[in-house]
Structure formats: structure tokens, C-alpha cells
Amino acid sequence: MRDDTVKVAVIENAVEAGLVGAILTERSIPHAIRSFHDPAYDGIFQLQRGWGAVYAPSAYKEEILRILSDIRSSASSETECDHADVRAFVESFEAENETTRGSAQARNSFQDSEDTKHSKDD
Image (cartoon, rainbow, N blue to C red; front, side, top):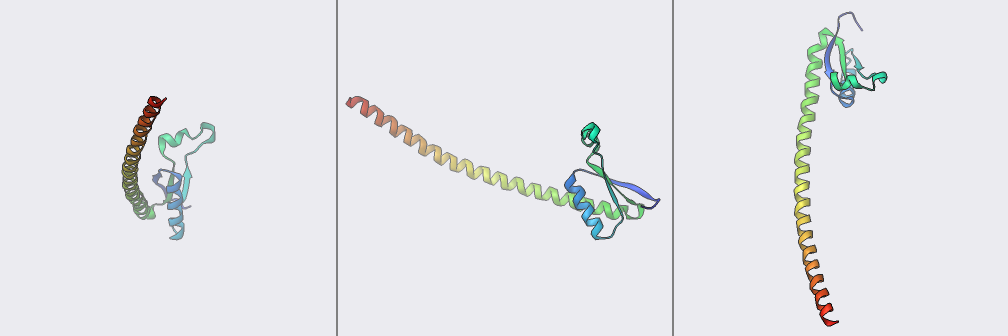
């Protein structure tokens, strides 16, 4: 690394670190990614300070911040989509479960009437 290396941004998690690292390497942007994990403290610093940080020459700071922003916005839009998918799944599951519950209630009601009929016959 050169002398004008600066801390560009805090990395939120290991996945983000891997993506940023891969993109920067692919674009031949000099960088270093440092994790804040310290085995002696069992990663407590990562809870307070983030997963780690990316360091690079100051000339690349804006480009790296743009890449990181793109990664984060892409991840948040995928999360929104996933929430919609989960909601749709839950709604269909509840509708199916309601139908099943209605059938079960009908079976139980039928079974109760059959039991009552047999007990009268005894």
C-alpha cells in the first residue's frame, strides 16, 4: 500500500467484505480489507464498530464508496423482494391452512356425531 492510504469505509459483514474485495480486485484497485474481529474479545468490537473496514489510496475513495453504495442498495432491494415473497407465501399458507382447518373441523364434527350415534346404539 502507498503512503496515502486512507480508511475508506466501514464494512457491515463478511459477505459485503467478500463482494467489495472481489470487485476491487477485478477492477485492479489497490485495497486492503481488515476485519475488526479479535479472538481475545470474541468479536465484541464487530458489534460496536462494524465487521471491518476497507483501506485504499485516497485517489480511489469515491469510486470505492460508489461500489459499496451499489452493493448496499442492491442488497436492500433484494431484501424488500424477499419480504414480499415471504408475505405471499405466508398468506397462501394461511389460506391453505384455513381450508385444512375447516376440513378438520368438519371431520371432527362428523366423528363426534358418529361417536354419539354409536354410543346411543350400545
